[in-house]
Length: 202
Length: 74
Image (tube, rainbow over all chains, first blue to last red):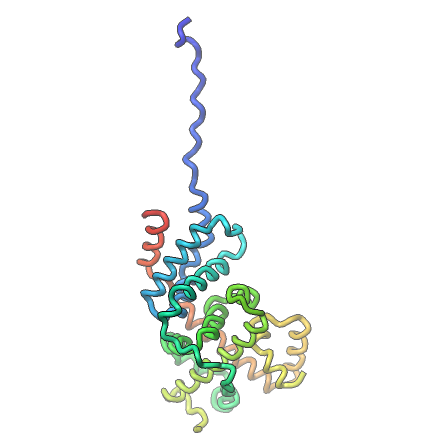
């Protein structure tokens, strides 16, 4: 018998080219948050080029650490935590935000009290454009700005924000309250200065 | 609950972060106190406005390409 007569067993099935599971899950769970990461990065760095670099770096760090992320949990919160740490370690020193302003010492101006007769529905807000709102947000002290951005820009819960910023939920509440009130007062002043509303003469 | 307490918790309420007890107390106060109700409506308009103005921006197409290139060599 020649060796050839032995029926050759079929070659073992070639395993399908392994789908790159890591990449696939990273695209599905992490890359979908690129816009959110960019928005937060832009408000933290106040500079489009730095925001791009910060997002890029965050994604690289996240991809390297992807095995440590428990799939299907809160990827956005996890990514934002990485982004914030990268910002603190590498960018904060270079930013120009005045950090000495303490919003706790500012008594928020009661906008509704001033405007309830003229515009109780807040129609004047419609006249204020995106850029002006973002400009005023960028003037808030960092601790207040990042809290407001995570809440109002990214829609995160108090609990999620507390976790990302490593502060108690009560601090999230008080910062958010102050930040929104101060921002509202500044937008009101702006609307008065532009003649969108008469306001109450000082 | 008085007007001052109610105003202190307005954002928690509007953010749907109030505890069930607090939410009930606030609702009850708002029903009894039209001026506070108007203020809450005004603040709700403000929050809606903030969200609408701030969520328009996203990462550029170039940044998306850059990230993909860096991660996967594409």
